[in-house]
Image (cartoon, rainbow, N blue to C red; front, side):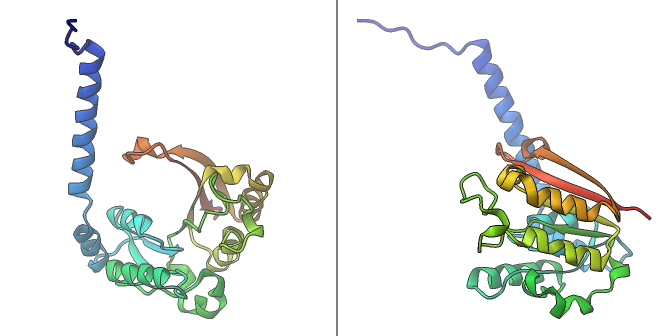
Length: 220
């Protein structure tokens, strides 16, 4: 029996065209946003806005701050385990700034930070306790879910001019969103606060991930 060869229709051709455009765009992003460019920015002696970072992780927020023209004042990461120590070393190598250790031990290192220096504080605390594939225990887990709340004490002590916090959007469902509401409520007396779920793909991330971003501007 004979069979007809599949002929691409207009939709197939259009999809292929879109795919090629996306590939080209992402390739352009990769070519422009290099580690070398970030290190060069952090090594610059020109005046610039300053940033401090809680939970530096794999360095994506750190890289973004460099591309935006910030100068880094330091960060935190749990260095009690090999992975955390490796992340801290990566951060210090990239920024030339100090990783001060665990966020939870903030009272031991916070005196090293001058609060009047910080234009932006950003944080992406561990969110496995809020993720849809996790146990969704939030602050009641022992995997770092409580850090989303504990970071507020650091923020209010350092008093940065602006804040960006990032977490998985399912944090709004865990414990009926208590942790998110608590953080927003603590910040609102001192900051104008806005929280939105952002689909990451519209900013060049080639995934379907979404993130809840809390952005705050000091009221003065």
